[in-house]
Length: 92
Image (cartoon, rainbow, N blue to C red; front, side, top):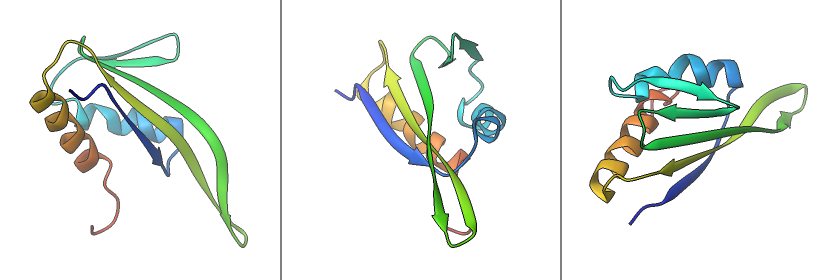
């Protein structure tokens, strides 16, 4: 059973919240005290990390934790795949 997935993502919180509805698959998205919920089954905590620096170039980074409540493993992995596609950058 998949309980949670943790990712480090190169984006700001504003970018995260703007792109999240594309990962929700039509489910409602709401924020409650810094925790974002997709429907009633997916709890998401997005915490800022220190930015990555490449010379003068700075990349924002967040640790994003997806926690699944009351959904089966197949549904959880389907959400993770949809989440990854919604946040994919570049060509691959």
